Image (tube, rainbow, N blue to C red; front, side, top):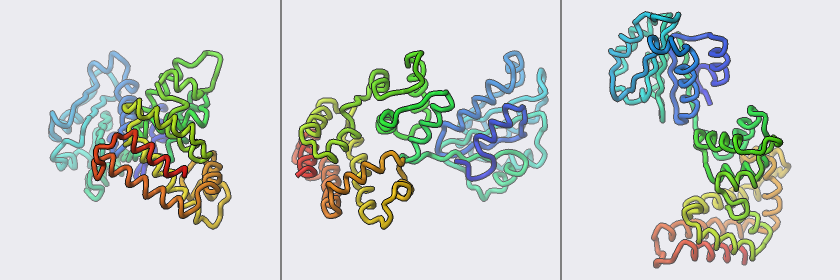
Length: 338
């Protein structure tokens, strides 16, 4: 998560102990952690009366570095610290004026740069110097296979557990947008029955609108179990609910599963721990690959991957002859099952 400087947990540990650095450079592809830290700086470092005088929030598109440095040099009026937060800092064009300030930053100012969706050139002297006198934090996007653990940890911090199937449903439907996932989890926490500390598939289905019976996870299970009737019911449901189950979401999930299955076939060690590590999956799902490998040999798996690619191309208009997505999925499922 943080390649350089202090970790997210360490930053929050210090903030809660009122230990502040003069400059923070919060950067990276994942905005969630950047927002969490900057929101704390904005709302919790100063009390309400102090914020009126000693909090400054500016946006990169509306300011320049000289103005930011001048703001940082001011003295606080009602607090031991003033907080200056620069949002959308990636839009600032010239960072060089910051270099002089970094060499001797004000100890009564907490200057926070929120540099989202990327990073500046880490070879720049000003980046390296911030790391010496302040905090450089890089927030990285999570991979698909990391989302299950993240959801479990988020819920655990709220004294709640999430069923494995519910985790799969959330990951499949919400992807790796942490802000979106966190918002939906908070919604589930608010709507869950007061007498339970579990989030179940039924709870997810009722409050987020994800069907616990008609989703890619259930389609994979139907394919593994050679359940022709169930697989076709799910495909028909997908065809009737295109917005909730677009081909562009279904096919990548199937491709990922069968791609992993091909890797599984050639693993010399098929013990649960090794498989989970090599395929970057939750150990809970290793049993699915063990069973799928008995149903689909390596040659069949390779053909399935080819068919998924062909279906994807046809869904995008390549040699499709105008065939509807629902018909393409029925054809794909037929090939896989026969």
